[in-house]
Each structure stands twice: as C-alpha cells, then as structure tokens.
Image (cartoon, rainbow, N blue to C red; front, side, top):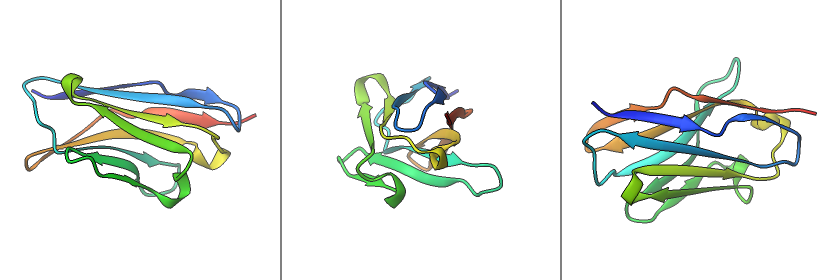
Length: 115
C-alpha cells in the first residue's frame, strides 16, 4: 500500500514563502513523475509543477520564477518551494506521483495567502 504524506501548508502574508513536502511510503521505487497540483474554491484542479525522473521540470506559467520543485529520490520525496506568494495562490495543494501506470494522490494541504 502506497501512501503520500504532505506537510508544510499554512497561512502566509503576500510576498511570503512556504515550502511543501510530500513523502511516499510503501514498497515503491523509481518513481516516474512527481508533482504538485492545486485547487482553489470553485475552480478545477490544475498543475503547478512536475518533475520527472529524467530531470525535466515543468511549471504553470502563473508560478514560473516564483516556485521551485525538487525531489529526493532516495527518500521518495518531492518538495515545492514557494516564494513571492500572492493571494491568488490560495488553494489546496495536492501531491501526485506516477509509478508505472498507477497514479497516487496526497490528501491535500491548505495554503492561504492573506494579509
């Protein structure tokens, strides 16, 4: 049984920073793609950033230059460093991993950007 455990969400002022973490537990290795999605109230879930095992990094246009995704393959973990946060970044952030043909999702962590 594979589980994803997320942490790092919270309340931050505009212009502030947060780092999200997601670790996969269970009998899992050589994860293909690890990424972060977010869903704001009344909106669809959208890709924020993704990192493949080959080193490719993809970002949503809205976060380029502000967010950085990284992964630690030894720990089966993925991180999202978020800088210069804006109120429109407020959402529930979900970790997603693709292992072979199977997709796993985290439970989500709330990020609120407000003064």
